[in-house]
Length: 118
Ligand code: 5GP
Ligand code: ZN
Image (tube, rainbow, N blue to C red; front, side, top):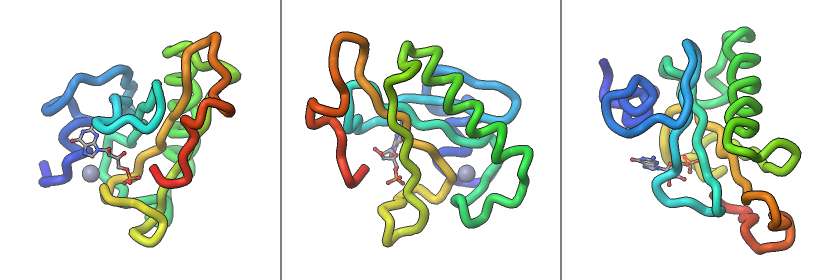
């Protein structure tokens, strides 16, 4: 095991996982920028999107994001973000999708929950 924080979380040794399959894991962002803010990461270490060279894993990750969104009740009402590289705001060097949303009854796009910097 390396010393990557998200490798540790994704493989179950650090924080509670909301969802997982053989390729990916999902857990709550520790500093949520929206009422629902979940991170979806590959279980194996990939630094960022530039370093992702496995088309199967790429597809699996996108499907994982969608499945997590549906699992937490966000079908049809969520935003996905990915910061690639320091200049774009990436602070953890393990690929992760930000899944952002708000539960039914609230219009996510007009609450100010959207943020340009995640
Ligand atoms: P980035 O800026 O790299 O795209 O996003 C990293 C995200 O990881 C941030 O939103 C930050 O709040 C979150 N984060 C940083 N450390 C931890 C941690 O130890 N646990 C969890 N669950 N989230 C973290
Ligand atoms: Zn890692």
